[in-house]
Image (cartoon, rainbow, N blue to C red):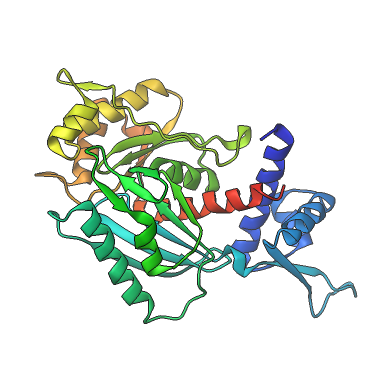
Length: 324
């Protein structure tokens, strides 16, 4: 997108944050809380309403005698995020205003195949969702670092699973949006105003991403540092041999990020619950101490939740881009 479109996207995303935070908001409230002019807010509201993203209704009362236009999100923004980032799979259903309506966690047996894990998860989620009331999602986001093409996901060994068919068991026929784990983590940082940080994701894979911020809002490219070497072996080869990162991999990974981006903070998203003899948190602490970067690092306490929220933010940005 060009600079003007980037700015319109940034304005719309800021406006939607105000609407989501309050459930609904008047144009004046949006202008006051975003710092945008009333004219700009009015133009963007018209675009968002025409695109079916928000709806406006007159307030019942107004102190000045005129009824204000109250903006709220439409059902078109009801979404579900399926997070396949690690051994623990999660599903979160969001209301149109971006609030989690329900969230479920599922762990498959470690020796299950990729296809079995995916369909065990889909069957259980379909069963759980039948027991609750919620607004059906219009779109489904899937977060994964696996390769994705034409409805199929595959790992580095070529093992394949039919993602489209599995998702259809939960929400049949809904549009599917697939995002990388690190991209979602970076989007979360950008949304929360920490776009000066690098998002470092530590799970079955090691990846990082930088929020693009004002240059290209919510356009995050994940980087997998597979050419790094640990004890003479590339990180990619070591991960394939071990099946999962060890403490030396995490140390090399974080030390490299620190050297590549000396002026940025590092937000660590530790996904794995355990890893051999050490937990993911223990490996991160070992790496941070070894690289002497403790003052620059923070570890997310709810990384799965943060990444799911980042996926929802990327989805919202994608929807808005079609109308600006």
